Amino acid sequence: MLSKVLIANRGEIAVRVIAACRELGIATVAVHSEADRSCLHTVLADRSVCIGPPASTDSYLNASAVIAAAEIAGADAIHPGYGFLAENAHFAEIASECGLVFIGPSADAIRLMGNKSAARRAVAEVGVPVLPGSEGGLAGADHALALADEIGYPVILKASAGGGGRGMRLAWNGDELRRAYAMAWNEAEKAFGDPTLYLEKFVQNPRHIEFQVLADGSGRVVHLGERECSIQRRHQKILEESPSVAISEELRGEMGRAAVAVAKAARYVNAGTVEFLLADDGSFTFMEMNTRIQVEHPVTELVTGVDLVKEQLRIAGGEAISIPKRRQLRPRGHAIEFRINAEDPDTLAPSPGRISHLVLPGGPGVRVDTHLYAGYTVPPYYDSLIAKLIVHGRDRAEAIRRGRRALEMFRIDGIKTSIPLHLRILEDPDFVAGRFSTSFMERFTAKR
Image (cartoon, rainbow, N blue to C red; front, side):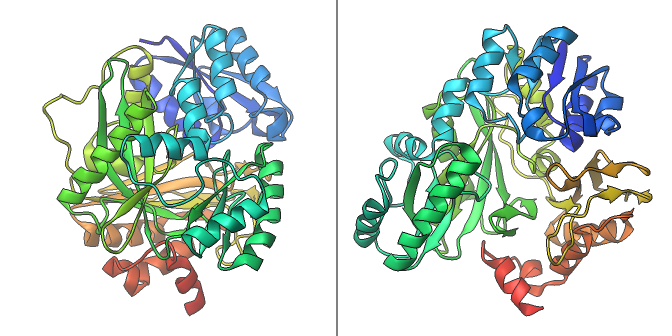
């Protein structure tokens, strides 16, 4: 087992990793920027090290500073959390070369799945369905136009090295595609330093379904069921739940086997997520694989009883997956996660500032993952996620009622948050009935 883990991240995920380490008797090291000296993860860790100025490019994205902090503190492993350097293959390589255990997959697996066009090819080779599209990176706008004429509109451009909706553009005809190509190319270059684009057939109104997988060093790969991630705005998830109302036991098995096949194709080790698009007719296609712990991992934890972060730590330490081989995991009850962001719930404008008063909800089936405390100042430099409210009920109806109650009890004074948005979503009859797709938020917003 590992002895001391440096957490190369901040905020709620850093606090989450510290909690798992503490239960396993592992010492922790927090890194922080100058703006995060008072962030909760720096207080809870056994040791903290400042790695640079507020800008993430000079601190949390500075691989050399993170590695140096690990060496100074005597850490033997690094947990990257999500975001920042979590899916950076070069960082994983550097960590390994410096004798540190990277708590995640190999650099080769990160590189393969991080290149979306290469991932498509690898997945297709093992029989997992993919959408019609380019076999590799596009040679230019004319190449994109020729391919779109072949597979039919609408089509979507995506950054090969991308994620989070950046470098992504939809086109319904040739004129739109030519304009979209230039915009997506420029955005991909700025966001990822790689302007390579690929093209896919666009599926209208699908569901976004992802499967959690675990893989250990012995070659064993298991899936822990699905998460429904269709409630999103501008390709950014807002809330997630498990299980999905659209997934039957038979389809769960089929998609789960596909997720395991993807992980095996990548020679994957540790925790990862395989994402699919699910059409109305029950057909599904591979979208991408996230080679890290997901923001929404708690909903899987609540319906399976498996601590995913502790599994990550055990696997990185050379242990086997702790789930008995003969045990088939089925979802127990229903869980929903609400992402609480420091932003205006209507305009999405960031809302940094000082938390003057804080009341966290509690009671049966309620979990809050956060780094907030009264008096804490939310800095303007980073992602706006400040807390995750996760609720669990015997069924979806109870989880929705429990979510509404917990959101009403959740009080964060001093800044604006997305709590009012979540309360409105829970009142929407289509959401309550489970009638939604990735276009839900467009229709939801149009109703107001």
